[in-house]
Length: 116
Image 1 (cartoon, rainbow, N blue to C red):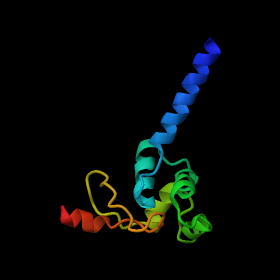
Image 2 (image 1 turned 60 degrees about the vertical axis):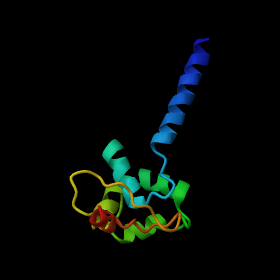
Image 3 (image 1 turned 90 degrees about the vertical axis):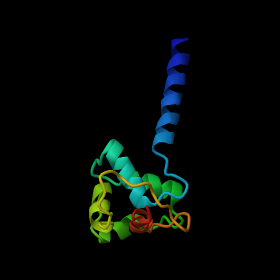
Image 4 (image 1 turned 135 degrees about the vertical axis):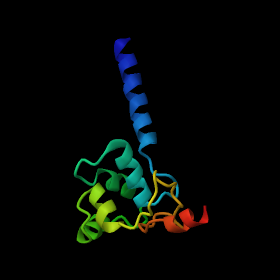
């Protein structure tokens, strides 16, 4: 019985982790990375970028190399060097969503902030 409970708890934890770290349907890579790094930090890898790429990117091939060429050699460096134009705010803004699902272009947050 203890093995059954243990297996059930492990399954439930795995499902919870999956839900907590899943990109939103039209969430852009920049907003996803900001959300994940705010909640779970950056470990110096592409952990969250790979998560977004594997579940959301329309053309996943070459995405990491493209970010690396622009100075994004880990998740937080992508935010700092690839997408440095995040509008000033006291808290993360809700993602404005991408027009084309799977696009690696960030959403138009300045428009969202100006419209509010």
